[in-house]
Length: 269
Ligand code: SF4
Image (cartoon, rainbow, N blue to C red; front, side):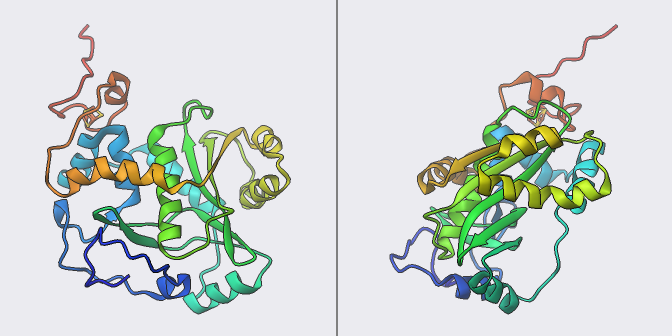
C-alpha cells in the first residue's frame, strides 16, 4: 500500500501479494473517527449488529464478559500456530501443496483503510482456497448473523486488495457452542478436520462430531464493498452512530444499563 495514496483512489494495477505481506503499516495523516489510522474489520462488522455499541467500545472501552473470555480461550486452543517470519510464510505459500496461516490483512476499500486478522487462511498451490472464521456461542449455532457473514466477506475483499488470486476462494464461518465438551486432543485436531471436510465436501461430518455449524460462501467482492459504503459515513464523521432496533440485542448487551438508546426495559417486581 502506498501510504501517500488517498483511500478510495483505486489503482487498476494489481498489487503483488508478496509486497503486500512485507509492507510495514505506518500510521498515516488520514485519520478516521476516534483518531484511528486504520479501521478494524471487526468494528465494521459490528456496525451491522449495533453501531452505537461499536461507538461505546471506543468511547467507554470494552467491557469484559465471561462469554468473551471463554471464547478467547477456545480460540487460542483451537487455532494455535507456529510463529514464522514473513519470508518463511511467503516460501510456504509458494511451495507447500497446502498451508494454513493467520496474518494481518490490510487495504483500502472505498474511502476506508481497513485492517484485520482472520482466524485462518488456507492456501493451495499459491492461492487462498478457504478463509475460516471461528465463532463461539452460547446460543443457536445454526443462526447466520449478518455481521459475522460480513466479517468473513470483508476479509476476502482485503485478500484480493492485497493482490492474492481469489478466483477459487470460499469463505467459511464455523459456529460452535462454547459449552461443547471437547478433549484437549479434539481441540488441537478440530481446525485440520474442518479443512479436510471442506476439501472432501463432507462438512456435515465435523458438524455432527463437534456440535458446530459450518457456513460456506463463494467469495464475491461487491457484497463487502456495498456494506463499506454505508459504514464509512460513521468513520468519516458524516453521521452519528445508529442504534439497533432489536430489543433482544439490547437485552444481551453489556452497555444496556446506561446506554441512552437501550430498548431493554427490565420488569420491576
Ligand atoms: S443497549 Fe442496545 S442500543 Fe445500546 S449499545 Fe447495546 S445493543 Fe446498542
